Amino acid sequence: MFVPSILLKQLYTHGSLTKTNNGISFALKNRLKDATIKDIKWISLDGNNIPEEKISFRMSGDEMLSVDDINRADGVAFGLRQTITVHVELDEAVSPEKRKIGICFSASPFGKLKFEVEDNVTSPEQRGGHIPRDDHDDYGEKAIKARQSYFESATDKKLNHVAKYSIDPKELQGNIEHFIGAAQVPIGIAGPLKINGEYAKGEFVVPLATTEGTLVASYNRGMKLLNMSGGVTATVVDDAMQRAPVFIFENARGARDFVKWINENIEKIREEAEATSSIAKLTYIDHFLSNKFAFLRFNYRTGDAAGQNMVGRATFAACGWILDHYEGIENFYLESNFATDKKASQINIMRTRGKRVTAEATIKREHLLQVMRVDPKQIDYHGRVAGVGSFLSGVNNTGLHSPNGITAMFIATGQDVANVSESSAAMMYSELTEEGDLYLSITIPSLIVATYGGGTGIGTQRECLELMDCYGRDRVYKFAEIVASVVLAGEISLASAISSSDWVSSHEQYGRNR
Image (cartoon, rainbow, N blue to C red; front, top):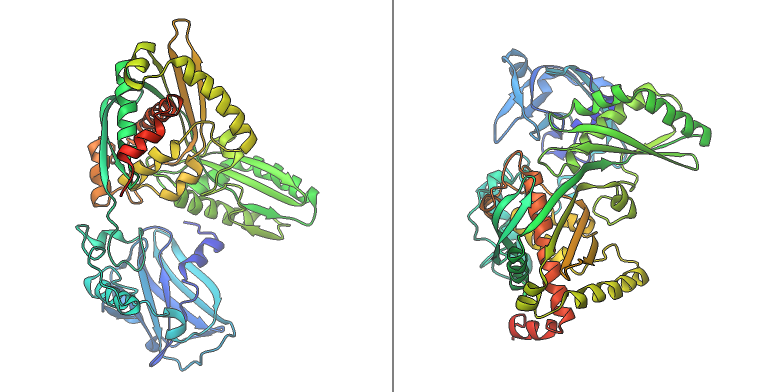
């Protein structure tokens, strides 16, 4: 299996070359896929092979293996995200000067792998800083207790709440570093909400994690109103996750010709990208030329995962193949800020990032008057006035407060909460029907959600997803429809409160923590 050189070098953990009591050490981390080491060919320092008897490997815990141990074994497991510390008995001085480290070994399913990197020897104090950690068992009780003690001694405060949790720290690798405990955010429920989606069908009770008074009550009131008029129709209309590398050339013609080559080799690029994952599917590559830069926007479907890391790895592999097969590239960056990860942007509004989903409902006039004490004409007029305010302020959302419901659901269900920055964009639309009812619709063009992977499988987060039958595979479109429907409930509730001048009085009654 071909592994691009730029991807292969990621096996080495940069900054890990450290002075030890009897030599030096450095770390290798599997960032490719589950593998089995078959044999060690050689390890070199500054071009000179190191004698095998001076090399040992810490695989996990306190297990130490020699080169001979590995070569005589019937394969040694090297799992995805596993770290191996290589110890070398060479007396090398701490220095800022770069040293060349080379390694050659064979591993299944890759075959023979060889690479060389540069790093400088640091002291343990320089590398580790002050926070206690363990490269091989950083989620064990010993490491956690050491960090808790460090935090308490550094702050002269006791961890009375943070250190109490029901989750298994061993399951948190890949979710958090330097773990010391958990933050407890209150969770309330709203609903049930009737949803007429293609994937979310029926009534759903929704968990909302927040410390903002009136929020759960407001969404609950909106859900009650929508249910009276038949519920919400929700539709996922697009699905895409991006990584946007930039390639730099001598001049604009070089960038232009490169894009032509990319289009001619799209199938091979797709093959290289998709080889890194059984889930990621490269659908198309946008290109944008400026000056002597070629910006490529790789677009993927990522199944039930949010997919930012997945598409980063896939695009990195594809770009590795591109760099090895196209001459004239002067520089390259995996991310050019054009995917606008964790940032609201116009391109995501236009082109979709995550799930593009619309929730809509027609609300009867009598129900608005009965529940909200407001006429549809008041809300429609208020919406048109607010549209001018939206234009003047340059916001990315013509609605009222969709990030409120999205954030509360994200915290409850283990989503990457920073994705609210992109997911906050929304287009609200309303109109009066001939019968005098109110049609209301909201489109969220960049809703980034997951029902599998990331933080979705942790303790309370998984429970909250399971509450809506949204945990696991083949659930992400269902969850997206629920989120959009909840957002619509919040929009009509707040719009009614503002239009009827009920807003301040509600906060006075429910939202003040005196």
